[in-house]
Length: 345
Ligand code: IPE
Ligand code: IPE
Ligand code: MG
Ligand code: MG
Image 1 (tube, rainbow, N blue to C red):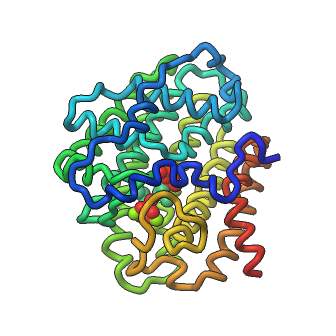
Image 2 (image 1 turned 180 degrees about the vertical axis):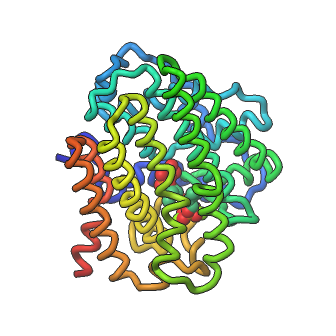
């Protein structure tokens, strides 16, 4: 059941220490992108297998490569400055969970729109921009991301900040220019992405995380922050798929519910990584030590129980709209965390 995604323990980050040697370099202030990252970055684009409606042709690895190649084609060429920082922020070996989920959902929904790959890459660019900002010294002050020094450690805080803004701009342009959409669908897609970045999404969630997360908070307040900083982007990802396939309101509603549950589950799992309760995720751990996460508020056991409940809801919503491949994929994503939860019971 999990073969198509295959993310068992250790490979949940399959980004897992892909570049273990980078850990030694994290204290450096200006480290050039690793040769492995460059090798990945120049992999040639091959869209011959990209038959609309068969987004997963060739399996998940092929889909991941297709996303990577398309991202490369959308990004500006290396310039040793901001463009290089943008490329490093996006092309470093992330899991690509959001675009892959979009391709999977599109397959489940029978989507044949040529806009889909652009939409998936736009979401990944927004996600990458959010990580570049999140890692800055004025935010989580992280040294390691995706097994490599964070973008500001490689290129400086000025270039990293501008690279994040550049990525957001490129993401909006990519959605606005995606092929094959009518004017209404196009405008809906742009609004979806814009809202996911703004005050009712990443910006609002990150601000709450930084300012309110420093003091004790209720579980409800934490859930609100997690929704804004993580769930809303999932909602936009599924929403863009829905636009591509002209989904009806009932399906759209289910997808929103699915995204909300997924946002909670995904952030709780990420927080469990941060306190090293789950295997290390190729990034700094202990960044949340002073934050009022759900683990700090309710403890590990209750957090694992809530994670389990959110994943159950995720699968229920996915299966209810016939998104069975997506359900299988998500079940595999959470499998290692759920195994820990089962042991804690
Ligand atoms: C990390 O997201 C940030 C959160 C929203 C918790 P991912 O775990 O998807 O990070 P990458 O893209 O694989 O690096
Ligand atoms: C931030 O949450 C999620 C974003 C929207 C960037 P975290 O601060 O927990 O993410 P990581 O652990 O640094 O990836
Ligand atoms: Mg962080
Ligand atoms: Mg985290």
